Length: 336
Image (cartoon, rainbow, N blue to C red; front, side):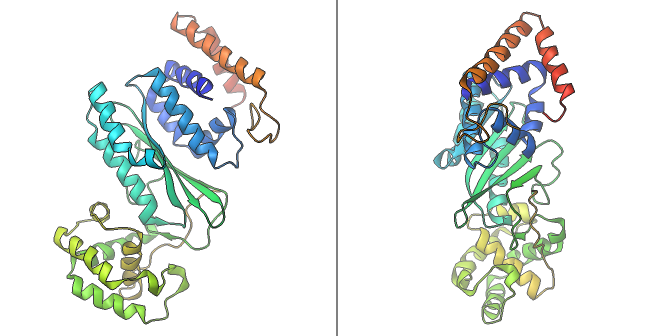
């Protein structure tokens, strides 16, 4: 998988600027197709982690400031800022925009978009010029389903309102609090105002809500609402006085439960309703790892790597006919 990933990456970097790879990796369909090409089945949650792992190892071998990646699964995701800073020191670029993009995208998909999927994988692909794409995945352990979130810096206007380039999921969820939706705009504005006001007042309003018969659509139960804990978080937001949701998200202690509580107060007391719509959207070349639709044919797989590697070597010598032939082939099959 690493060898084929490396051949594909080298072919793309030979033909296109690195930003083109970022555009493609940020497209859920293209990423899924890439995973299938290097040997995973469409329905495998492992497709995301293994495909990113293979790309990461391949990019480590290529070792170029044109295109880099940081992060991964579990503890590797937590080391993303450290990896970005290490690569920045090696290649001489400013790491802070990449680190901020990594942190904010993870915070948005774990706190602002509350769809029941807990993030366990996060990776950011980036260039030394500050362009980036994020691929991260969450899991619903109660049903054994995964969901993948894609981001792209190009064309991104706002980290908060509908920032995704795509969300891939096997099903739509019926109970979702989507604070990234433009339909949640007024709700977000009231949340920021609540975060800036005296904690005593907001705590009283939350205590009042606990005794009410709360609507099911919020997925927020009385046991989720600890006024004492929320009051501590509100003390921080009161002192920082965030001007918008982005600043609010960056405050330590502001997480999913805190934002749900503020959203509920904004909705039930101030009439600013959020969106409860799920924003997720609903070809094998070498076979699949579990034999579906057929086992991986190692001979064909190795031949693919050989063809790509030869085309790359010839292109570097000025003989681009083979890459042009591959390009003509892709024009015959535009969905490939």
